[in-house]
Length: 157
Image (tube, rainbow, N blue to C red; front, side, top):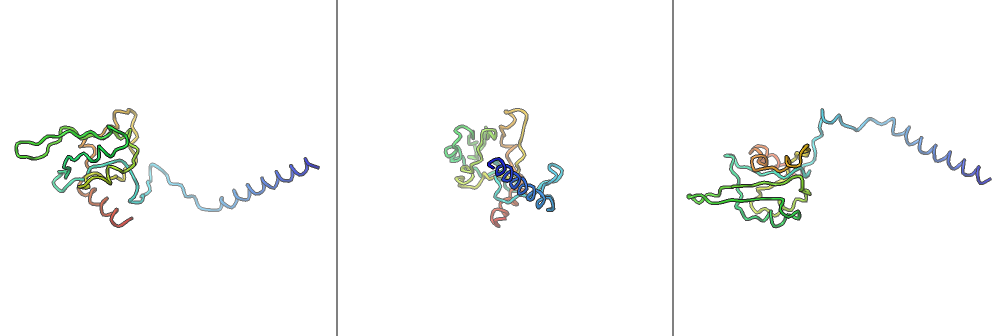
C-alpha cells in the first residue's frame, strides 16, 4: 500500500512539473542573441570605474585621494602627481586595477569633483590579469559619453 502511495505521489509531481513546462513552452522567448545583440541596461548599472572628462579632454581631479582612502580593496587606485611651474596639476600615474575592484562604488560616491563614475561598459574580460590595470588614458571617457552617463543618472533611467 505504501509503495502505491509513493508511485501516485511521484506521478503527480511529474505531472505538475510537466504542466509547468508546457505552460512556459507557449510563451515567447526572452533570451537575447548575445553578443550580436546587446540589451540597454539601466543607468544605475555598475560597469567599471571611468574618469569623466571636460570638453577639452582635461579632468577635474584635485588629487585629494579620497577615492584611495575609501576603497576597501587597499592599493587598488594609484594616484601620483606633481604640480608644474604654473601650478597646474600633472599626473605621473593614475591607475585602477579593475581585476581587484569589487565595484562597490565608494570611490564614485566620495569624489568631491565627481571625476569618477561608473561606466555602462560591463565587458572587460581579459586573458591576462595585468591587462586589467587601466591607466588614465584607458579610464577616460569622451566628453559626450561622460555627459550622456551623467544625464541618464540624473533622469534615473
